[in-house]
Length: 260
Image (tube, rainbow, N blue to C red; front, side):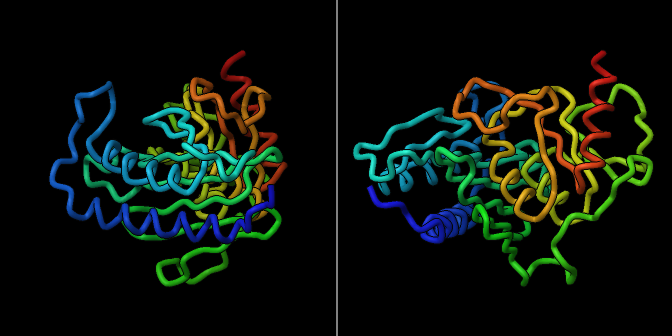
């Protein structure tokens, strides 16, 4: 079977994220769906809108809301599109402008093409393996999109998912509540690092941002030494991202000390 051009995948992602932004602009009820714990109405709307077109285009799909779904005809064997319809759902429900949709095509070698879009601001991040990162320059800050270069924890501004059990010697920290955007902020130099505290993230939360981070020149790993890329819907990981390998080593050591 002929390989697909990753730019065509990103074109499809672009169309889906734009359609989702329009759909959410007309949404009146941003409350809980009642269907399962922690699920919001916007999660359901986003999952339905994104899932069906991907299946219709012949992709196997893994989403947070629906798990693994096989297309009627698998036209792209070996590729699974991993989707977080709305990352940061609680932020969205409270009107906090830090929530995103994340789509990532994964093949046998890992993340191939990814897009993360802040649904509140429209800022878009895209990456193709081996080709660097593209951002929506119309809504981006007027500066280079690259990691900060921070190598020392004492100088670092960190983002956390979960409550740090002790001060680890960082300069400052924030807890924003959307891993995909937090890791993209590491890639772009706004944060120096990101640390998952609770090992509670599904692959959909981070795999798109993982590709964006590595293509920008950042470093990312699972805090417990596991492969980050998994297509197991039940698996959970603890992604840790950093501007540099030196800082990543310090963040991993810090987290290991907390769990000793």
